[in-house]
Image (cartoon, one colour):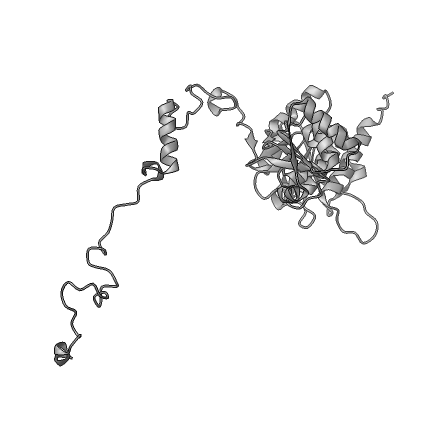
Length: 342
């Protein structure tokens, strides 16, 4: 009320530093005014990004050209190649376990470091792993089992872990080139919606065992070449290429145009596997996920949908088992001698 203005302490005296003025939101009128935009990290003095930019500028590399030279790089679209450059996984992986490590070293996987547990109980696999790593000049580092558990996310490492660089995926067309060089009809496995890397590793191992030329996985919603896939493949991933397709249905259509027969594997297929007469021709086996099977578009792109006859109440098989059975049937038919026509 107006009469209260004369009460002692009702009005703050000028120059005092006591509480904020009522209605200002705790700020002065000057502080409520807008400020200039926050500068970029490369423009802030002392910021790591600014120091890195200054170092690049001093080195003469320029932005985006740290390697020097302005010509086309290997694998660049500007180099005249019809295929895009190979894609890599985001980071390196650790192959854990004695058998996977030995198989990877035998196959010449481009490894970086071999981690060995302290006071490890040696056997023939450990001795061979140490010898192969020493012959290749790899770094040998001793680590506690606790550290190995942490590094491998609790996987069964058995005291050995091999650090491998990021996986370099092939282009789907490279698998056809490999088949042509081998002199055998193309045998490729494509995975549709398989998200478990252990299934991917099992498929890779079956492809290597039955003479396949590679595996194709979609770029999205699919398992990739992780440490789990490396381990299950037992080193076969070093011999079998894994290609990554931006669009799986488009890649299947390109395979068809190249002369391959597209055979989808699904429990509700119209043809049983043992009746697949075209197994001796260039073929792409498409394996769907255990739960949903083949997607609608992939089913439509398939020349035939094949089922694996099963007895009992089992409705479906996981991708690794289904691919192994189908690859064995194709391999068996191709190994059968052709009868001469009269």
